[in-house]
Image (cartoon, rainbow, N blue to C red; front, side):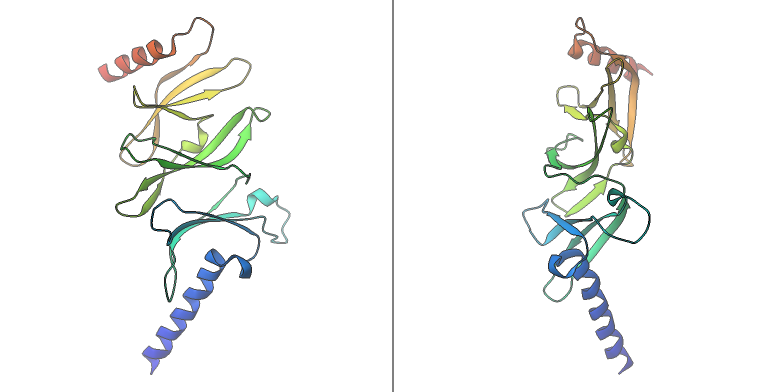
Length: 203
């Protein structure tokens, strides 16, 4: 009897949590749903514009959930509290680790009077249906991926505009390759990247 009661309690509790994640009409704040896989039961849900009664801005009250919708209950694989601005066009899919699968880049915020954009990156594994956050990616300004050289290229607007190069290590953390370099009219970007990578591999 106790076991039945416990299982019933667990089911109700799980559904209550799941409703806050996947059932928008019954949840607080505003919700956005992203489906990174062909199987639409897997959902990345963003909950934002929460009124907590605290003296904080709305972008400080954003939660990201990743889970799977089920027939009887939903599963939440992970949840994080983040600081981000939510805009209309906030999702990009691009392969950042050169595995042939487009990863999910989620707009985070801007800097430099709106010229520099920052994103959170989640590596997509369609075989295992997982999303893994890349640590430090949200510190790269205006990130893009150079397929030829297999590097992440950041471009920052400031008094002088600079390029910086990165890769992702086995622990899903970005690391910088060499030092950042200034953009100018005489710069051959392809040649410069090749030179930096050549020096880096010799170390």
